[in-house]
Amino acid sequence: MKKANLSLPGRIRDEKVSILVDKIVDFSFMGEKLKFCLSHALFSSFDVDVGTKLLLKTVAQRINFEKIVKTKDIGAGAGIIGICLKKKFPHIDVTFTDRDMLALDFTKLNNELNGIGDYRVSGELGIRRADIKYDFIVSNIPAKIGDKGLEDFIKKMILSVAADGICAVVVIKPLTTQIREILAGAGAALTFEEMGKAHWVVHFKAPENLDGIKVPADEIAPYIRDNIAQKDFGFSYKLKTVFNLPDFDTMGYQSELLLDLLKNEKPSGACLFWNPGQGRVPVLAHKIFPGKISRYILAGRDLLQLQISRDNLIANGVQAENISVKHVSLVGEIMEPVQNYIIIPDVIPMTDGYDITLKDLRHANIFISDKSTNIFRLLEKQNAYRVVKRIKKNGFTGIYLRRH
Image 1: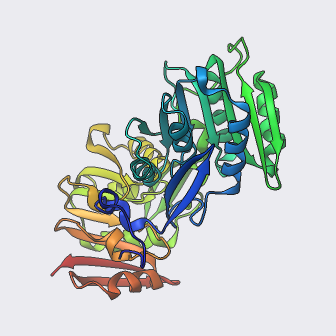
Image 2: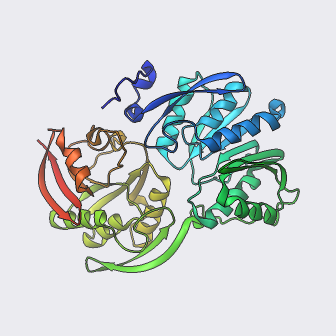
Image 3: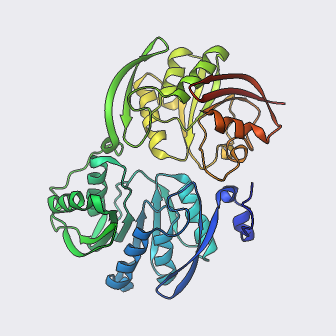
C-alpha cells in the first residue's frame, strides 16, 4: 500500500522496499541540499534525529576532510551521516554498515535519491574486524546493545582507525560516563567533545600502542546474555541468548503458537524461519521432527537474530551445511525453493501487513504467529490465501495458510 500523497522518483518507486517509505525530508549540510527517505520501520522516522544533527555539526566544524579518504559509517540507519559527507566531499570512499538489512536498503535508496553511485554497504554486527584501516569512522551508536556490546563497539573502532585517523560518535547522555571510561581504559585520545540537551558527541584518536586492546574473536560474543538449558514441548535443548531480543529466558506466545501449529502438521523439506529470534523455533523443530527438515533457512532483517539462531542450531546437532542464512529486508525477496514458511512478521506502523509478509511468496505451507489484531489486519484485505487452521492464546493467534 503506497503512502498517500508520497511521490517517489521512478527508480526508487520500483524498489521492493519502497513500500516502506513513509516520508521524504529535506536536509542541508555545509551548503549541500539533500533529501532522505524515512520509514516507520527504522530509527527516526519523522525527521533527521537530534543526535545525528549534533554529530554532523561538530564534524563540519572540526574535521579536515582534505586528507581523509576511507570512511566508515557504522550503524548507518538510513545512511544520513555518510551520505552528507559523500555529497560534500565526493573524493571520500564511504562504507555503510548496519545489522538491519532494511537500513542498508534505505541507505541505497537515499544514495540514489541524492545522486551518489560510488559507495559500499555491508551487513555487520557492530564492526567486523578487517585488515583495512579507515581514515575516519563515524557512528550514532545504538544504545541498547548491552555493556559488553558498547565496549566491543568502541574498542573495534579504535582498532579499525588509521594511526593518523579519527573517530567521531554521538551517544545519548546517560551513556556519557560509560563511554568515557571505555575510551580511557583503551588509552584513546579525546580531541573534541560537545554536550547537547540529550546527547554527547566525542571525537577521539587511537593510542600509539594497541597491544592492550583485546576483543573477542567471535563477533557475537559481546552480545551474549546467558547460556541456558531448557525443556519445552517435552524436549530438552541448549540455548545461548543475546541482549536486545525477546524470549531470552522463556518461550514467548508467538513461538509457542508456531510450534503448536507445526507439531500437528509435521513439516518436512526446506523450512524458512523468518525472524527466528533467539532460535527457539528452529531448534525445537529439529528436536520434534528429527531427520524431517532437510534445510533450515534462517531469514530476516536482523543479523543478530540470524547469527544466534545459526549458532544455537549447530549447538543442538544440526549440521552447518544444512543451514543457510538470508539477510534480507522482505521475505518475498528469497527465491530459494521452500516447502514451509514459518513466520513471525515484522510489525510496522502505517504499512499493509499483506504487502510485507505474504506478497510474492511461493506456493508452500505458511505458518504465521502474531498478536490477534495484527493477524486480523493481515488477513482482512487479502484473498490469495485460505486459513487451514487457527489457534489463539492470550491475545495472540497462530494461523496455517495455503494459497487458493
